[in-house]
Amino acid sequence: MSSRNSTLAQGQIVDASSALNDYFDVLLQEVTESQPSVEGRRVSEEVNSAAVASAQQEGSKFVIEEESSSHTDERSSESAVEKSVVTELVEVCDQSQPECVEAASAEELNDQLDGAEVDEGATESEGDNAEYYVEGAPDWARRPFQALEFSIAKLKLVIPLVHLFGILDWDQAALTSMPGHSKHFIGVWPNHGINSKIVDVAEMMVPQRYQHKIEPWQKRLTKVVLIDDSVWGLACDEIMGVVTLDPREVRWRCDRTHRPWLAGTLIEHMSALVDGDQFAVSLLQGEESVTA
Image 1 (cartoon, helix red, strand yellow):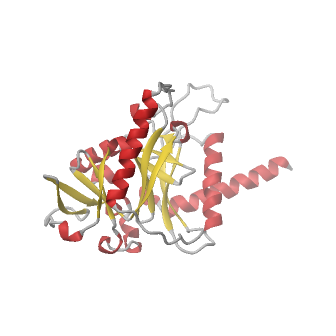
Image 2 (cartoon, one colour; image 1 turned 180 degrees about the horizontal axis):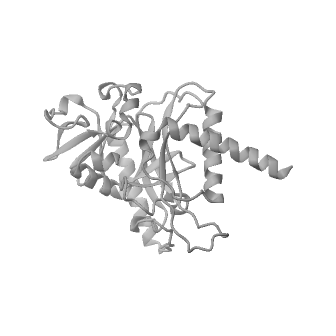
Image 3 (cartoon, one colour; image 1 turned 90 degrees about the vertical axis):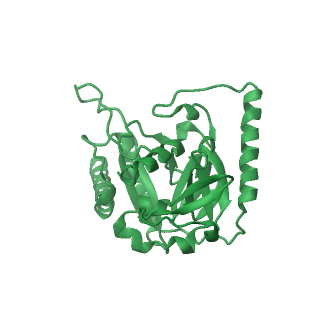
């Protein structure tokens, strides 16, 4: 009886996962070579269950889910081989409409960032230098770190504060258009002697077949997140605030051959962790390095 229930449950998981994979096959460019481990199946079941439950609600949002690498099956006589990472863009429904709150200005947000940096320095001065190793985590994530959480076309992203250089309130009048450039390049923004290049990240991350579901950037953008010494500005819809993350709660990507800017995923936050420095490199290399 237990075996039968287990078989039925696994079948439901496979069906749900297959449907999502088929729906967003354009982003499934990294394929696992073996069956998922027990841990992988557990994560898939949690995410797929949430997607099924949310499908009865109104509205929609885009969420990136990434299955983590795991150990090879103990029954295999072969040596352990690290599995490839599968990145999916999953469309789920909002469980409730967000409450209307007054958006913080860029000045207030920058003050929060400055305060967060001060708090981090104070922690280090108190002698709390304990570090621990987490496979796949970069040097800036050897201990709990702070990051900025924001959204782009309902896609939730998180970027570490160490990669940020400020936030600007959206002002279309301050932009100078860039004819002849890729569609995702919105324009140039003069900022303290630097011409920051502003990009619409949604135009780059969301597959072309779903672009019609996104409002034009002229209607949804409210802030600009600056990275790479303010050379680049990531235009975003909303900034949720600063969060403190434990590296052990992040599903880090060990193989970043594809989408190197995607450092990992936060299952509980239903968001993607962006490596700001690597994203800047990808922008320099062109759109293909961001979407590939």
